Length: 184
Image 1 (cartoon, rainbow, N blue to C red):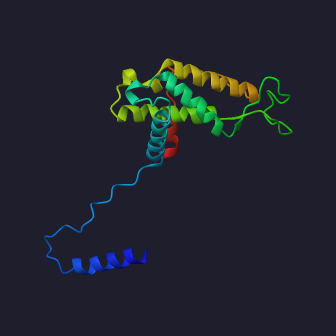
Image 2 (image 1 turned 90 degrees about the vertical axis):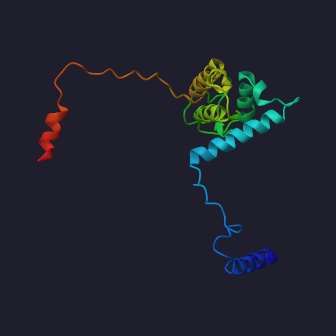
Image 3 (image 1 turned 180 degrees about the horizontal axis):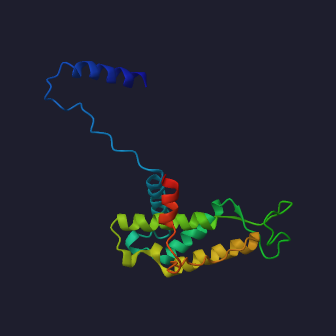
């Protein structure tokens, strides 16, 4: 390590004696650091690619379909941190169980949903067409919905579908009056 430092400092001193037009020692401008989302998307994409390579036989990205994605999501469950109670568990349906149990840990629905979103974007950024995107398949949406409902029941958390807000066409527009009242 100290040899590397000495070499760098020696190069630095010799480069000062070089003509100004010689750019062999200059570093390219540093690229802007990736956002947290972009970094995670890159890691997820690399992980999925490694998963495909480790299949027997290895699967190329062009051969990948929604079944490979579903297998990948199930594979990830072994690394999950969310306790999902089984139907036979005495704590099934209880949001805050009073004691530990032997039910498995799984990936949380929200984590899987976010993962699929990142992989769906990465697929298209790597040249895949939106029409053939295995991460956007209806089977993936169904799987995620089933995971969400299963985890909600197992933890006793009711998930209710949100109602869409309607534009209120009736009634006066009070926003202008409100703004004028507090503008002075």
